[in-house]
Amino acid sequence: MGIHAYFQSLTDLERIIRCPGKFKFQEHSVAEHSWKVIQYAKTLADIEESHGVAVDWKKLYEITSSHDYGEIFIGDIKTPVKHYSMELRYMLQQVEEGMVAHFIDEHIPEEFKPIFRRQLREGKDDSVEGQILEVADKMDQIYEAFAELQKGNSEQEFVVMYRHALIKIKGIRLHCVDYFLQHILPDLVSEGARSQIDIEQITKEALAA
Image (cartoon, rainbow, N blue to C red):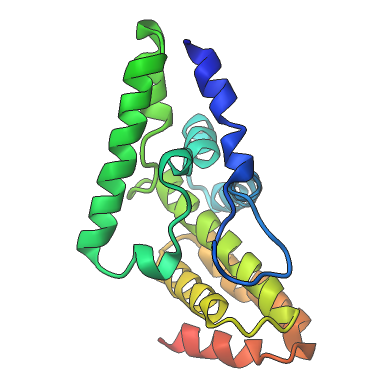
């Protein structure tokens, strides 16, 4: 079927709902998540460049736009489950990467296979672009969880998601992380002040962890 099979498969990302099995005031698909991650990453990269950091924009767009493509095959695994142990996380990643590799071998024309293997790989690594992807991905978890907590959703899953994402971001050494913690997060917390759930306290505990 060639590249048509790839283009057609992208529609599946619109049907995969994030954080399945929990009550949510607003559903989010993997496709919506990927689009937002690209938007966050653009601004985060601009912040890095403003501090003199060189950014490979082509790589950044490739890994941010495709970072969750493998969920077409395994769905969205809840964050607490995914990170229950390093062994489980590694196994899930191996399955996902294996199925992506099989899809490329089966459907992508030979001359394009190296390109697709590069674009659909796991993009989170120690490079500036890989770290920006990690921050952008976790930022969307924060915003998704925040939106639910702000509306009074008492599902513990969203508290865990918010805390885990914030702790992860805090541990990444980038200028954009400093900017997020100093200028963006306070605005978010202030906006959530009227929520029935104490978002400020949850934030303080995560930052102190």
